[in-house]
Image 1 (cartoon, rainbow, N blue to C red):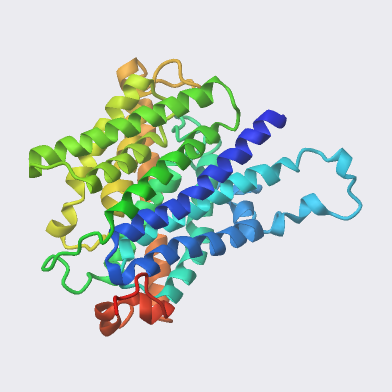
Image 2 (cartoon, helix red, strand yellow):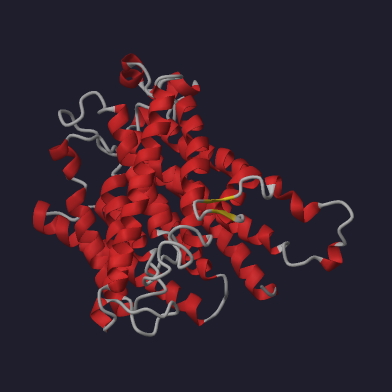
Length: 417
């Protein structure tokens, strides 16, 4: 962790932090006019709540000494005080100071993961309930799953995969997208559908905000993926290039699907395809070749374009398509590693199409399934606890008149006098 790599990681952390305001633009533009501020506030409040909790306890749960592989010891470094003990000579630190750099980078991941969930609950969740949910979910769900995958816990070669090929997830297919996607589905089911769902149009109120948000997400995602390698070298360049081409292909795959199905490619489809491609390459950026990234991204765009319509057929109100994009493309990207991982990737294990057999594919599926079950069950428990205490949903009259004014005392746009 020399100075150039420290600079790269801190720059990457800044890029990832920018993604959450970018997500606020993306989700805000997709929302209806009367709820845009509430939607954006959910992303911004995630920065506040999760950022503080990460330093207090979240980083310890994610990266601390493991407790049976399930989670890091939450009391191992409360507030990261071990680095600032009195009497320690700052010129002779033992390497623990690098935890500051890793904690800074990790905080931005925890923040964006929580914020992603908010897209499923637009127009109808109490802001106070969202704040409580964000805090509990970040500590009880995100941090343990992060420990399983990146902290030497349950889903590592030290535990469940000691006698199997270990799964590959360079930047969070399981930890971020599958985790958030299944949580979004459970929370949407707990809240129920919006008034008029499936009967009246609920179109995005500002597509220019959506496009701006997608652009900021794309820009920040290079830090998200390439920064996860922790070093500024050829492997970071591989991840950067794969992130670029998979995203391009994801956009084209979505637009092609729209053109065939609906007759017209849309700006919303382009923005959504960008996100689908980004999500799919997140676990695979270090595993696949650029050609594999193009195939992976194209399929992600097609799958998510088809999946977003399932909510109308199945009756769940995933307001801004968190399930259709993040869960579906996250699952596809995670599983695709087991198919397209090359025999020259930095992890060392190839996928099915590159002569590695089915072992990596099986490991990827097992890891995804375990995260889905844990996140789904824990989200249900947290959601029910909030529902039967302070309540989850705003009253119907608030939903009809607009959640912005009722919850925040302001509106995004002044009406013309």
